[in-house]
Image 1 (cartoon, helix red, strand yellow):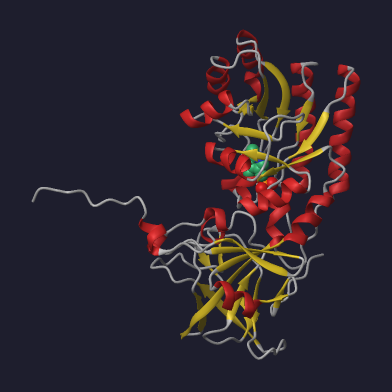
Image 2 (tube, helix red, strand yellow):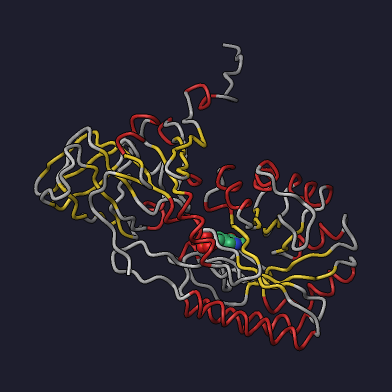
Length: 422
Ligand SMILES: Cc1ncc(COP(=O)(O)O)c(C=O)c1O
């Protein structure tokens, strides 16, 4: 069962006040040891492929690469990030896989010209890739007809989802692939982000049915991602052993049917990085109106969008400047600096503002939004012309800047005032 403190003075052994002084706020801080621990949790799988969309800083990719993780990319620039972080192209299993439902011109060129393995989520991808890369191996991402996520917006299966090849169209896809002499060597299913074990379990049987239909060209199956992490006090950790055993049984049945080994990959994003990340912000105003108390921070949904998009819950803690870890607590609403009513960290799905019990705090003190490593920085924006935050990685007790805070010059780079005739 998870416990989250409501006061803290350190992150990974480094003083929060010191981090804020050195790197300014708002700043994302990641604990490398947590990422390593989460990767080790998954060691039973043959391969862990990191879904970098969760947190794609080069230093995080490099860290995971050095610890043996493969990588998933969903855009041309994610492929280029993987290459920039030192991932190779050749290898079995392929170090980089491009998973998507479309190719844009640049992603198709990269996959064709640099021989990056492709996980096709639409018949058009098969057609477009096959037209230029006949003879190559591909993976098919199948939508098994159901999905599940922590929120409707993170459900990636079922008939209303745009993701993957609809399971009933498999035969047509195999015919299309064969026409282009593409070899379907892998199968992949990802039903959503933050799914529960009950739904994840159903994916195994769906995978088995699909793999039997494809036949013995299949040498690898991927569970997709979706593993949940504890965000709330009392949340249990997912039973990874039970999860692995289910998939391993499926894999073994396929191996005995096909008469050759079948690699088992898992593809988490959130699970590897969520708990490693902390967003440090400074409290810039404490407002009292009617019976509400607001802590207003210098970080908003331009930095961490999960609350406004999903009504997502993040643990929070106060950094008491006097070191008093036993301050009285009060119900507060935590908000950001943006000129937008929805800029509230304590909200539920649908935009309902709720309160959080936090220690009393004053302007100039820091507040840490926790479990912010996945879908945190990467979903940031420049709304209200606010620069993207800095990112810092703590490794063996030392804090390293891994992304400089944007400057005003970064912000307006590329903007042009045209010469207009008056
Ligand atoms: C294809 C694919 N794989 C893996 C993931 C990672 O999901 P999660 O971060 O929930 O593990 C995603 C995200 O939704 C995805 O779209």
